[in-house]
Length: 414
Image (cartoon, rainbow, N blue to C red):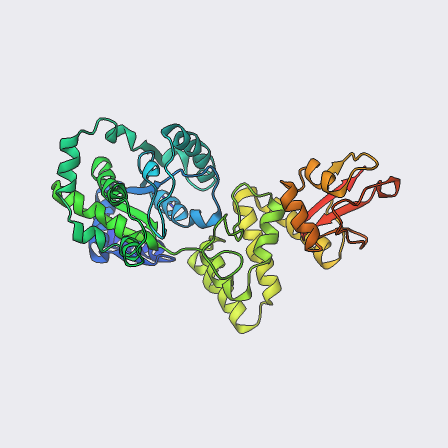
């Protein structure tokens, strides 16, 4: 895809508008107001002036999963089409806690915590975004010197009735859950962000519609051109039932090892392959249509379809060569019941308990996790012997053997 060009004829502008709009609409839940967006996009193409695309993030933690990348990939598409991406680091709103989808207040973070989280967060976003076309802005740039007069002015530009129409606020009150006054300011602050950076389009998940549209309200109140909203879906986790979430364990992390990424995609239910093809594998519209046609017709076996999806996800982060290696490794481990080519080695002490080995080798993160895996019969030697007793100790006969935990973790004992 090329950048915006100058000197286009009216016909060329219309053709470019159709091309860009079709690409941007694919995989979007909603573009609103759509007609206004098309006029904005057409003017951008005709004048060769890039649109300013906003995406706000709350750095409430330091690692993210591929579900977070759905709107980020849309920003990358805008960048490939010649537009400018602006990431807003919510170092103020993170201290409030986004109430969207929550039944209770999120514990506030310190400003220092948000700064550290943001740094690691951006490392992961740049696996997708074009650094040369990305601005990073912090809310503290404009909120740092806010006074009471400013705050009252902003508050006067919306109503309590409007804020309480927010589904989450309404549900909290209906269920007699606490709702802090500070939480009502979350969408207000997000809306003001759009004023300060003069956003043309704001990206967000479908659950962010209320907050995104607040930006339009505040831009109108300041006599600025109101932004349009482009909303993306919420990616279902690998369990096929709930929103992808680290706390639920149904996620694929950006920093996951390539083999883990491959294996997690292979674990999704068959009925989620369409969603993952569109929102996780980053297929183009043509690639997606071809993939789904083969799958629906039975020409493509579900197992082969998942392998293609898994390879596509891995290649986005690690390259096609690594993706092919992970496919071959997966087939050896799971189809042929062999051990991966590269397995971490651990020098164990004779008499050490299996619990000490699992945690000491960092194969598992804690004693509690190790005990849980042992109780679930998920720990065994590759040659078949299962281990369930946490006090079971290793002897000389264990040297050279390979431990297997779950489906994807291996450890060679030396």
